[in-house]
Every structure is written in C-alpha cells, then in structure tokens.
Length: 367
Image 1 (cartoon, helix red, strand yellow):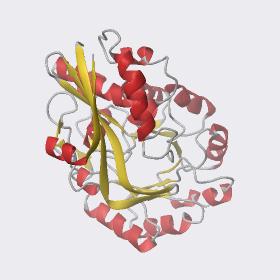
Image 2: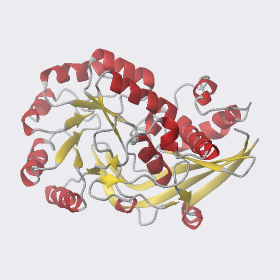
Image 3: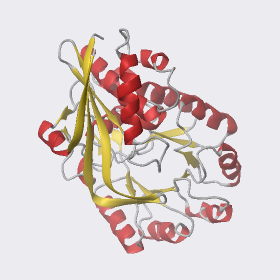
Image 4: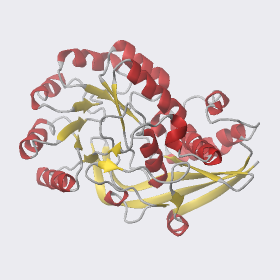
C-alpha cells in the first residue's frame, strides 16, 4: 500500500447537551484523529474512540495515544502491507488495546478503498442502499427524557435507546411505552445491575426491543441465565471486545443480539467477521455508537450497509451532539434512514479549520 507517514491529532469538543449513563455524565469529548498517507498523497482517516477516563473500557485517550505512537505505528511501517486484513496478524504481538488498534485499522481501510477507487462499503461487502438510524437518550429527569423522545420522534428516528439503572428503569420505560407506543425502545444498562434480577424480570412485559448489557462485561454466564428466563432479547455490548468474545457469547447462548462497535472490537476487519458470525448463527446485529466525531460515524455508516444490519443503529445526525463536526459532509438522518456518503473510502473529508480549532496537540510519524 506504499505508506509514507501518519499524522495524529488529539482533539476535544463540548457536547451540545450532557449525555447521561449509569456510569456517569459526559459533557466534554476527547478523541484521536489519525491521518495515514501513501506515497501519492492519498489519505486514509481513522478515529480513536476511547474516552478520557476508563469508565467504559480499560482504554483511555492517553493509553491509546501511547499505544499508537510507540507500538502500532512502528509495527505498521515495519514492512509493507498489501491489504488491511494483514493488520490483524501484524498487531498480534500487542495484547488487547482494541480501540487503539481500531484507529489504525480504520485509516488503513479508508486508504485502501481510496486506492481501489471504491467506497469502503463496497470493499467490505455492503449491500444495503441505506443505513438504519436510531438514537440514544438519557436523563435523570423523566420530563426531560420524554421531551428528548418526542424530539427524536419528530426527527424520524425509528428506535430510541434509553439509559437505565437500578431504581430508574420500570417507571421511565413504561412512561415512554405509554407515550410513544409505535417507537421501538431499547433499554441500555451499561452493566449497572449486580444481583438485581427481579428488577430486570419486571421489564419483560413491556415489549422492549431488547435489554442491552445488564451485567458485567465478563459475566457471560449470568447473561445466559437471564436470557433463558426472559422473552425480551438480551443484547451484549461491552462484553464483545473481540472475535473470540463473540464466539463465546454465541456458544454460551448469552444473548440474542450483539451491538457491534468498530472501535470496541479492534477495527473493521474484526467487525466484519463478527457480523458474519452473527448471520451464521441467526444472532441479530446492529451498529453501536460512542459519541464519536465524523470519521468514526462515516465508518459506522459503511459497516451498517452490510446485509446483517437490520436493526437501527446509533447513527444519529452529527448536529445532535456537535455544534460543528470535524468532517464534511456531516451525517444527516431523514425519517430514520442514512444515505451513504458519496465518493471513495468513507466518503468524508476533514474540515481543516474546525479540526485546528479543537486540536489540543498533534504528532507526526515518519516512515
């Protein structure tokens, strides 16, 4: 692929509205932007989606930055690669760190697709004409939660994801189901339940689309046990941090749905393999979001064009979270659908002015 150099920027942006989960509230979002160049000046874009602190996974912006700069880029430039799938073996000497690996993997896939003169979705087997969009909402106040849901309905979203926790589950979910009976509602616990099985069983009669990650990421056994008791599908999110984790979840029957995130599993190559695994075993799959910037959103759209993505994903419009994103064009949602970006690769370009405004520090790696 004739790689020449890489530039990565550490950025920070303020969300338009604070985002609440059972694990905390996010008001500022840090991230990493990776630009990977070939000898002809073509550029592939990747994004590091770890958070500033390790509340979601063990990785952080700081650890990802160190891993990319000191380990992954030296391995990437060590010898030529011919295809993005080469990275999985190349990076095998580095344990874990899927979000750091995914940032590099995304950039390589985008560059590869541009070199092939094709959209990324074509290179990975996309067949859908549009991606399906849902939205995530969360608030400590029920009236505010209902207002957010009403706005989402007016904007045409087909599915609402609601953040829940012990003591804040049945009442808000029932209120939402009563007010918006025609919208699919997904309850996301972010591992908040520890022995609160009765609370979860009480949700089984609400007709929820699914309950996402009620227990600890490494607790496949308890997820399997509650899935046997409930009609509502259990979805795994944080538990699926690799292809091997997905295989175990399928074998243990720990879920009937998987939330697939490129950043969390280590990149596009592994995300595609997990998608294929889900299709083989009739596990539903959808594309999750990480409060990302435009690069990762564009990669998510490309992934969501694979045939198995029949559930609306977290592909909400860029202007839902950001006053101005770092890429153009920004992601738009029309009646719950996202039209694929035009052009080769992921189909977006950096908004250099905006990127410079939000960049905290920048580094360059030379071959």
